[in-house]
Amino acid sequence: MRDLGRRSLIAIGSSYAVTLPKDWIKRVGGGKVRIVEGSSGELMILPDAREHISKVSIDLGGMEEGLWEIIAAYLDGYDEIEIRKERMRRKDLETLKKALSKLIGMEILEEGSSRILLRCLMDYSSVKPMELLLRMKGIILGMLSDLRDAVAEGDKEMMSLVAERDDEVDKIYFALVRSIRKAMRSPEIMGMIGVDPINLLDMRIAAMIMELIADNIVELTQSNCDCIDLLKEISNLFDRGVRSFELKDFKGALEVRGRVNEIIKDLPAEKSLLPLINILFRIEDLCDLVSPKFL
Image (tube, rainbow, N blue to C red; front, side, top):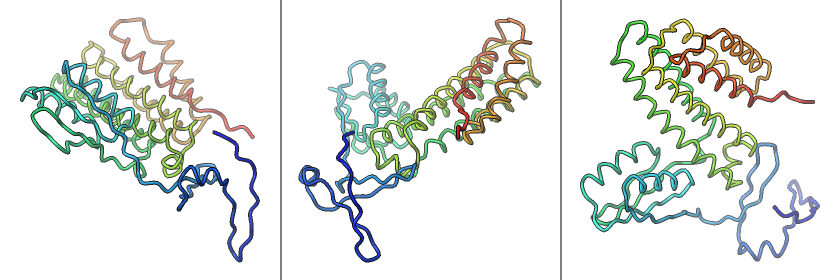
């Protein structure tokens, strides 16, 4: 960011005008500009250019490596992803479409025997990271609740369904990472969703913590853990921890953190309890993201 100096406001009737640097006007091609208000009340003046569509082309060699390249391009914010392969087999297409089901907004625009064009149709002005984070929270709370019932009833099928729901958490996590990266690169998007870079960074870390909690719940479905009452309290602490993060409630975060520490100290060091202990540590990490408000 370059400081272009101070400008005076010029009163024109009931409005105000401000001069812009001549070299900047030439560089952006003149014409109209867009004015976006940031989360802290600042105004950003941006060239009124047409929406830029970022594109990338991927040569699909090995399918596993290629899928990770596609996911990486999605997370990195590319709008169009062109996939090329000498010959697309039915199995390749089925594997690809299964992977695309985890990428919110990504659709197939063109499909041929050697080329597939993907386009992300996500509207960034309406996708707010905090809303996605709260959707992750809702799914994880549902996983904990159903896991508690499955343990109480010894229902193996329900445990399997709980584990499968981790895919939904991953899907929202990918979309959240993508939206945060797009916003970090675009002052316009950042202004539209009303957040600043520090909040975006905190939400990125919180999302990663919550994704790991979902993974720990999957591990619990495969363990011999029989802590029904503890699962209920952990669910409550997780809910309060996320709410403290959302509302920037430092006192609430401290209370959750204190109770988490008490539980960890009282738990025996058993292998079957390790996923449970990891969930508690991650709730503590979530609370650490909440800072006090200094005057």
